[in-house]
Amino acid sequence: MDPITKALQKVRQDRQAVGVGLQKRALVPAEITYTQTRKVSLYPGWLRQNRIITGAVIDAYARAYKVLRTQVSQRMRQQGWRTLGVTSPGPREGKTLTAINLAISLALEANQTVLLVDADLRQPSVHAYFGFDVEYGLRDYLLEATPLEQILVNPEIRRLVVLPGGAPLANSSELLSSPVMLRLVQEVKRRYPSRLVVFDLPPVLTADDVLAFSPYLDASLLVVEEGRTLRDEAARAAELLQAANHNLIGTVLNKSAG
Image 1 (cartoon, rainbow, N blue to C red):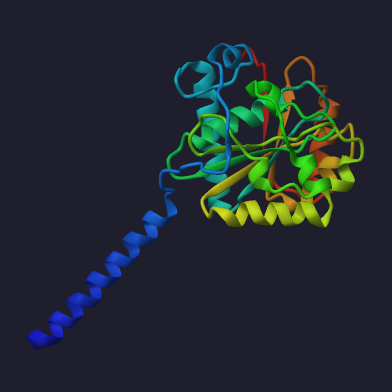
Image 2 (cartoon, rainbow, N blue to C red; image 1 turned 30 degrees about the horizontal axis):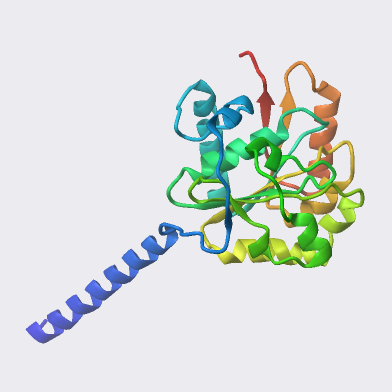
């Protein structure tokens, strides 16, 4: 091979290497500056009271969520999944707290951003756990076409944005399965290629919201509480999710002494 041919080949190889490097860097979100998203201040005492992790303290509780994060994140990436629903068989079994802490833990990873959506429109409570007031919520987007820019909230945690629910709604299953909701899911997935979207959903056995919304989800996580959730209820909830051709990637045992 003559020197000129060798030189041209070297240039092509260098260009290919640069291209691969740029692609890899593109997968990792740059530092995000929130210019339109509403920012709220959080109070450490309130977060501790509500058992919200922040990354500032690494205790056994936070480590448990890191393990859950790793398991969920690996499974989602392997399958190319971007949307995860968190639900439970019945009320007050810890699914909202699990959704919040999992979303925070996922956002602490530097290679992705996370959107936490309060889709429990019958009893929206994500904002209450964080301790901020809701100006607009998912309800306003679905009913009043309020722009997302006026609804999204950054709770002082990098790479995490919250879409609160707003005022409670009785006919939530119809709205969750509406074309407007489908467009929203498509938009939030498309806006950031590295984004994972975590939906806090109503309990499976109390309404048809989860089953109505399941076609928009890639996977779901079922939260049960030790000493509260009956075995038959957990089995029935899992059966309903699987019957809906849903990818149930695991069960979280809340308040376990083990």
